Length: 374
Image 1 (cartoon, one colour):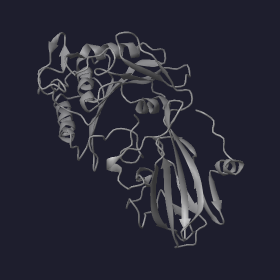
Image 2: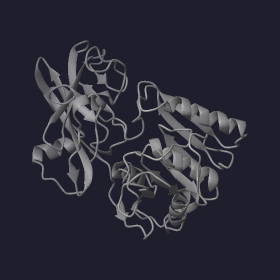
Image 3: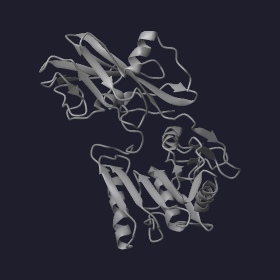
Image 4: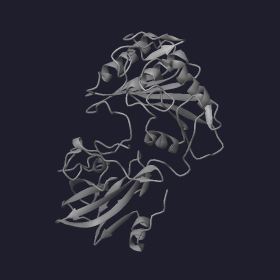
């Protein structure tokens, strides 16, 4: 991270984890956090029963200021605790301590037509969110929260010839840790660094593996050997900071297919499987209208057959959005669980269906609609 110069008064506010003018005080438990961690905001010193507005603003990479604001009524102690206070007006209706963060909209109010791309510092996204309290049309307290995707000490290394991707490593501590083989979807290329950086920030080494539309890989999703993914898992298990007995594969959308196939065909390499917006049947080549997507032992895997799960030897989590418009991932996730039940799988397996979510159900929480990283 690059050190940022701040005025002395602002530095004092950060040390106090809040800043105010007059009696109203806005406090936050952490001013610098990982992007997937919730913060806890509280407003004190308000006249009991009086309404106040609490808002959040963040400037994206192109200079647009995204804004969200909700109205709350102070309790009998003159306090608004955003973890327990229900807004009386604003962009969200239920109690949600992070509601101000994900409900921010761009200047024209239409997040569907544009994307919030966080600014980048040293190649990693960093979001600065200004949180403020307004009363009578005037801002009376404020603080700034910095949300990072990469913790200090997280580094990225190259991968050997034969694999295409990047290896993201937590800050060294001399130990071995569970690791993740990360697979993207129909966009192809190397999976987004934001997810890998956060996982590594929490102590998990991550191999971001490309399997098509990347240097050294086919442009189309066609005849991709499942053995390629097995080679990646073997290499990952040999890294000094990785516990080879605890490797999980995480796949999104199209990437859920090789993830589940790898878990079934190579159970000695995969000890847990996470699927976002999954499919449950083997797809054909993409974007071509004919041909096979996957092969095993030199033979194409038949299109539209259910992905087998009899060989899976570890927990499986499938997460799907209830309103996925790309394909019926909700039904597919439930189908995978039924087949694991039928196979008498001894490990925990669960389908989590998220109300209101779509095909992009995976990713970093607490971000405005339309956030992307590249």
